[in-house]
Image 1: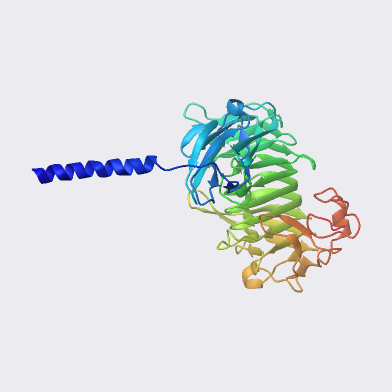
Image 2 (image 1 turned 90 degrees about the horizontal axis):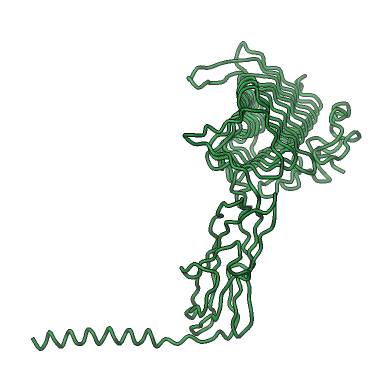
Length: 470
């Protein structure tokens, strides 16, 4: 019995000793400045009343002693658009924050602002005050007012009347947005259209989608995660589906970051001065469609930048169809893939005649071959590559002969176009001063597209592709 009492007494004495040691830890004022994992937090662009993702900043105590940070607070206090959490505690003003020697703590940051106009800057600072002076971490975000289109069981999310979107508010699409039969959607210069994960747009038969950007004010269509890390990642949204009998007119648009870009099914499409890049499968997926493109720039698409199925009529003039990717390196990554066949949703094979004309253009990639034509016996497949620069590995892969082919006119094979920077992070598909594409364009063809995608004249000494060298 005495032994048990002795053991119990010893246990409680041990607990008290540990507790006393913990309480006796002394935290001193810092004698040197704190260190941070970053000095500026660039938050994702956020929309009216939509909370951002959470960002983290680590604060380091590199001293050989435990310190007490007298104050950590938001400069704008309770009025700030930002919310912070310091070492697991939410708030905006924290006093006497302990930090053990050679240790660190996390500060988590997010923003859920009220928009005051089409686009504004939200800025604040996390201030750290101690006897060694004041330090800061800057918080920065672009805030946009937004209009939401949300598909639900009670809202099919259909535009039923002729509609014009302007750049006064960003457009955020959740689920599928449908443009109804015989309805026109006009998207005006500078408008930003953001698609949430697994979202897209459908344009029904007889309907028209007019994307009316300008050189100074492109229309942007992309995923709604638009912090820089997502600029070069595909599959953030689905696609824009143009159904049979619909019409697409697109000028000065930037379309990127989804699974397929444009899905055209028996669609009449005109694309000018536009940039389509970073899609998991195809930038343009066209079935029995008619498409004319001028000053089109494409890059970084898994299966092919352009996929042409069940024939159709395609004309590409002064276009740069590139396909370079580190992320999608295991995919086919053609520049143009074209065939007379298409397998429909029921698994049946359909066929159609194909006419493909490519003039004053570059079709190139980091693969051995950039063009693949697959003709179905008995079906028409007429093509012309005139004054083009192609990556070509031979008849077996390309599906056509290059040398002495009357359909390949004054074209160049396998000479590196020397893009300034072709990888997704830079996307500068201008050519360098010693590029073999300079001065190789047909002047009569160039006269039909007298200005390049940047508004530079190309009526003399035309450069192949969408950018004139000057």
